[in-house]
Image (cartoon, rainbow, N blue to C red):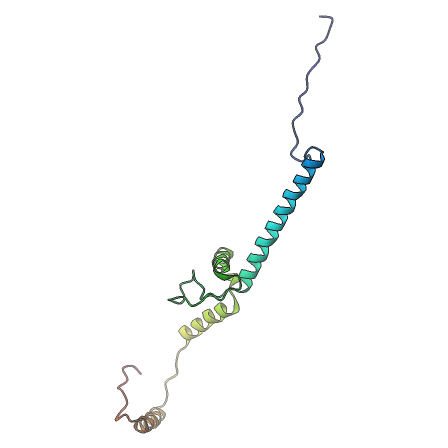
Length: 146
């Protein structure tokens, strides 16, 4: 065994390595990269526009039935995209209209009316009856709850 055997080494291709040089290969690589960047920029712009013009009454929402015309600047696609993004991003992404609606509901549910004095109630009923006669009604409808 006088001669030592040469060890063969195999090269593992690296994921970080650029594609092989060549005028055709590098031009197509640049074109693919450019197309990908433009596609991502377009999707990002569409998502931004649709979320910024979100309307809680647009098509996928169940707030209003039948849904009115789409108000989203990106159209029906933007309405669905913004609804989905806001659904997955959470309640913190609500617009000012939806936050105000939620706050009004909370205030109405928490409101506890103070009882009016009986003299004030009789006076208000007399005013309402007088206006009802002027409008052609004989009497006011009976109130069920006070």
